[in-house]
Amino acid sequence: IFDVETGKELKRFEHMGRVNSVDFSADGRLLCTGSKDKHARIFDVETGKELKCLRHDSEVNAAGFSADGRLLCTGSRDERARIFEVATGKVLKRFNHDAGMVWAAGFSADGRFLCTGSCDKTARIFDVVTGKEVKRLKQDDEVLAAAFSADGRF
Image 1 (tube, one colour):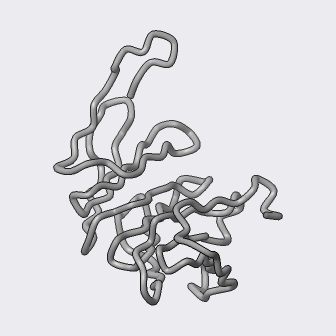
Image 2 (cartoon, one colour):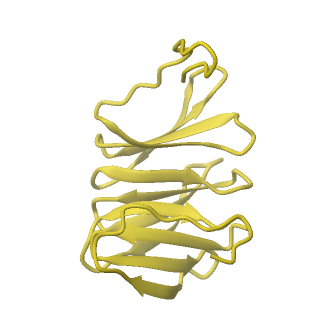
C-alpha cells in the first residue's frame, strides 16, 4: 500500500507468485488479493496480518468484495468463479464456465448478482442466492473485465 500524497510504501502484503487482482472492502479495513500462487488472501489493512488464505485449483485472476464486505468473489484459471464468506473462508457457491478461465468477477452494488468474464468469450450474470445463470452475453473476444454500474442498470 502506498501513500497517495508522498508515494511512500506503507505496507507490503506477500504472495509466492505475481498478484493479479486487489480490492479493498468498502470500509477500507480489509484488502483481498488474487495471485498466480493459486490463492486469494484477505488481509487486515491496519495490521498487515493475513486473516484468510483461500486455496484454488489454479491461478486466481480476480478477487473482489461485495459492497457489504460479507462476501468475496474470485475468478480462476480453473474455469470457475467462487463466492466465499469472508468471516469463515467457506465456499458458498461455485460457478462454472464451460471452456475458459475466468478473468473477471464482480458483484452488483446490491449484492444480488455476480458478473464474470472469461476467455470463452462470454460475460455471465449469476444470481448470488440461487447460483443460477441469469444471462450469458456473447462477445467477439475474451472478456478481461466485468463490472456493474452503481445503480445496477448496466
